[in-house]
Image (cartoon, rainbow, N blue to C red; front, side, top):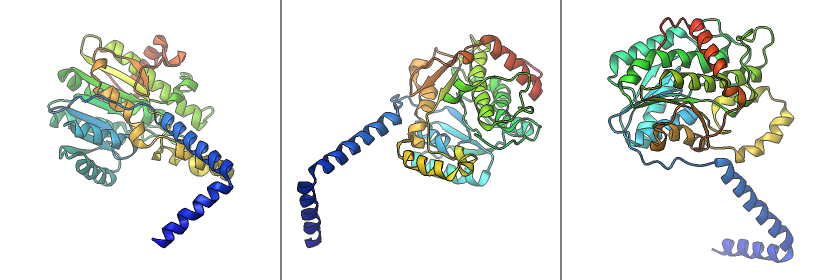
Length: 335
């Protein structure tokens, strides 16, 4: 007790001696708190229940995918985590069960860098599930070196777009059967810097990690738009979104390559970046918000509609991308 009194006395004495310093620190602290709160963005306030419904989330073992899984499981949904690393996915599933109080959380194998794996998962889902109410294409890779998928595609375009393009098309019949149902594609603000390089889709002439990432995220927006056009009258609706800048494992490829001085500068700013729970809010909003039931093909950010970049509103480019993607993945039947 005496030590506590001594500490309090010392702090009070310091405050009397240096009132301007204390005032500055207080204002700075309040300011930082305000900025952090603003950066966190809106939260999904929908109380919608998902009892009896089934949700599939790609990459649901970590980051915003896992937090999305927890939220939707709490709402009563059966949640399928489709992940590449089964060990990590099983551990994540156990945590989701504990946090949500819902035992209906299962794991399925999915490697989006393999078209064979995508087709195998779709075959498994079609054989084992009677319905699919929400498909959340969440998994992704960002800023990786010049890698190729199993099928020879540039890794970011292959995983972020082509894998999800094929998976969605393979599951469309089940989604239609379960209508009203939703398809949620996690894109990024990076789509605003993106272009679809139809003459060099795999970035063979000039590979730059961020150029490729922006292309793949623009592809998510265009895919959502064209898919919406093709699904008119089916009660299957589509949504793309920017989750925000978030503390997740997505930056694991570029952070170690960043110069030390940049890491020193950026590290304190991590305090202001969204947590995975905060970052999952727009995904959850697009998956459950009742007012969106008759809206489709739009882009969202911070739990609200937002106008996509002009290149994300190009219907001709969206159709051209669809045709190219279908050819690349060997999609023989137009849905």
